[in-house]
Amino acid sequence: MRQFFSRTTHLHIVISCLFLLNCQLGNAQPQNLSTSILRAQNLENQGISALNDWANMVETLRNPRTDSLQQLSTINQYFNRFSWRSDRQRWQSDDHWSSSFDTIRKQQGDCEDLSIAKFSTLLALGFKEEQLQLHYVFSRAIKSSHMVVSVRLDNGQEVLLDSLSDSLKSMAERTDLQAIYSFNRDGLWIPKLSRDKRSLSLIPSWERLLKDDPILRNPELLSQQFASL
Image (cartoon, rainbow, N blue to C red; front, side, top):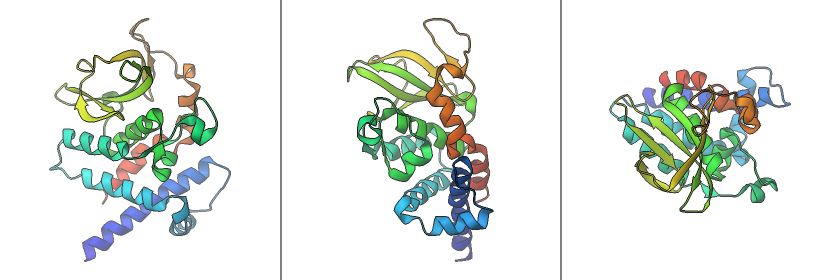
């Protein structure tokens, strides 16, 4: 019983950290973590239950007996269950990239939102930046632009997390996808032009999220909190 309450308390701290970070990035300025904890305890209508579900999933996946492919499969399927909502439906905009915090809290989004949330979750789980890339592609299957996440495992294997499929396949196996560009927090790559890393200023939507998304901005902090569970 003592272990259960310890774990639950730590999960509350993780969620409270998220609310604190989100408030600090916005207009509200809570004075300390205690204030954020009180806010979190009274925000069921703003998605605290969904954030708890997410935190529980990440904490469970940190079990050392869970291999990388199982972690990736679980994360991919977790987000693929979210409700699909277009930018036009949610934001009355043709193109808007939502923060991971917002996507998880509301459990809805489009391919870009879900991919960004998967990317952030992998960082919070402890995957290294150099292992991860977001890929903006053209999907021949849906005849439209699309976004997926690639993960390079320690054994060199590369797999894709895709909102269109629960299966994990490599980019080479996905002949239905045509690469346009890829990026992470370190830079941008446009394969048809060169292998050189380019400035993220070419993706203003991503630059905005790097400043405004509490999960994407501070995954290392969250990873440390999860590691202490």
